[in-house]
Length: 385
Image (cartoon, rainbow, N blue to C red; front, side):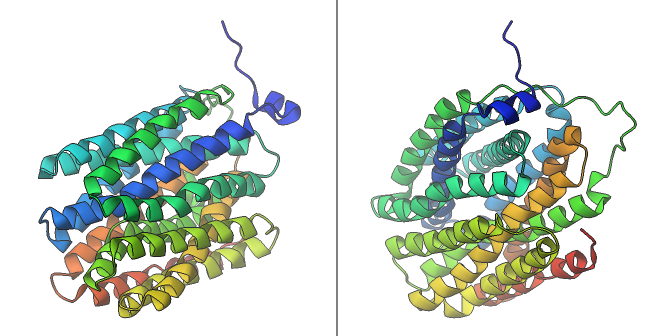
């Protein structure tokens, strides 16, 4: 029987396969970014209303949130590597299904599968990175930097491919997602986490200060990602921006997110709390500005860059703060808990805007959602990290 490497073995021997981890993050993010632009465009061109686009995206968030709730328990039974492998296969099926049919129930099933894939990949990858590194912030910064390759190139590629058809773009995305399985298989097979049988507290781990800070950061980052993958492409399309321009602008947001995450890797000590506060404010305010300036590509790009930089800081520091505040055997549960808040925001942000557009123009609804995203800054500011 093959021996499972322990966390200490991997940290000290440096055999965790960083190249495989980086390649997997880049490929998965590329496939996800293609879907983030192609799915809303396909929905609109298939005749679905603006409100229905938000509902479809919300289905993905519900699936991710539900899956995240069980990830802590699942990682006490299966190695984190298994979830990374499964995520690529599930995302490939998701993109392929919607490329073949735009029937409403196929849309719903496709988004459900995408949510499961997101939960598997990000929880598994982030947990693996933290377990094989001495610095959680540095490890997550590297993961986000690698995923940034796909997040930057994906939207632009999707915009170009969608000029032929959104279905064609999604077909390419399905192939890319399937390729994620190859580097994921090369990751070290770390043992599952030990059951919480040594007196450690169980349940409501998000109530602990560090995990709570990571959870609120995840909520703002999730709201940003949910809107970027739903109503941002739609409002740019309504402002008569071309598919290529829309893809490029979403790439700008993702590039800023990568830059913000990379800079966050250098933050330590008391700077962590204020970085979270500033990140939340930037993500929310930048998103709120997109609607009013959607008709001017340069201004829209600036607004998206501000929001992306803030979200990048949150995506790096949030999970790191959560994992460093708990017992090593609780790291997977801490990341899953913080990720659940992110997934919840992925649901409530587009779903909330879907409800608001029945009462007001999309630009106003997007502005309102962006301003609401800044509220967690109040909670994080009061926490002691």
